[in-house]
Length: 113
Image (cartoon, rainbow, N blue to C red; front, side, top):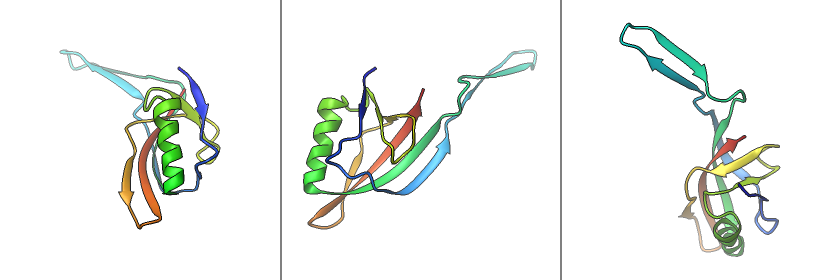
């Protein structure tokens, strides 16, 4: 896995943030009624739903970084505006029209080990 940093040509002023813990338990139920559960990871990982307002120039720079450097959802990245960990996109960000000069990117990001 390759780790890159958030591009300096794109602002990192996220808004409308919603963070939620990722399910961290695995459970098995036996025919006898016995249930066994355990933690998958020792670290509690988080999932973030964020929005980012960007100009057309920043949007072009973001897509270049997302497709060519990050490899879309394949690799991890760091971003100090979110936190000190490593993050990965859960899906391709969704661009929304806002006005003629800016666009809004809706994205889902999850923390990785």
